[in-house]
Image (cartoon, rainbow, N blue to C red; front, top):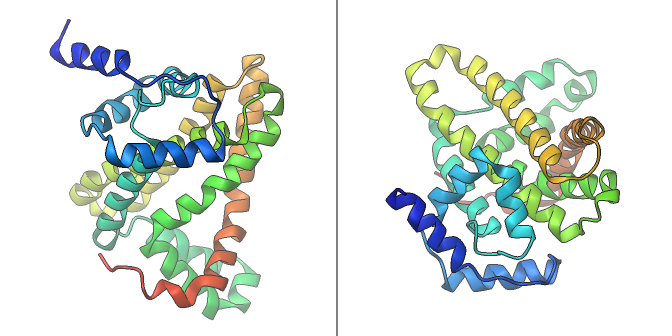
Length: 249
């Protein structure tokens, strides 16, 4: 057995097992615990596991092995911070956001506000992704209600999914650097991969006939993409005065 596999087995065997299911209180408690008990090497293991076998690894976390993967909130923060750092150079969604204004009569009529909103969304794509997590959490909780997953468990699932999607976006940076004229195509491919990954994780985690779980997974992601836009617009409308205090990268 390789050294990496032996280390991974050691991490799993020493993981803190708990029989309590995820709740909001448990998520806060675990976050506080991990602030002072962090094994940095688990970030690499988590990234690999969530690519290779996300269903199995997230199920282990949900079944009680809370330290099997990197803490979800910390994993999200790290991946999001990397995207924030790279965004000014690679402008991942610049054209994709801006082109929406010219395609909608309503957006045209309020072009001043939406120009400012899309500028914010382009600069802080991490924030827009994080704000989408509650939307996907509520949708997956309701549409997969028969799976008996708690709202806290759905939050953990969707946090890992969002963090991993942000990590995939990081991997787009070298391709944009090498092929800048294909940036739009690269981001389009990324969006398709993110959609498929989201649906795939739902299919692996929730119970039922695979085709019915697959259909419901597609519905959750499609609705989530639609609903996260008004949520982010509302956030920007109410909190835009505070955005000037966010750090520039």
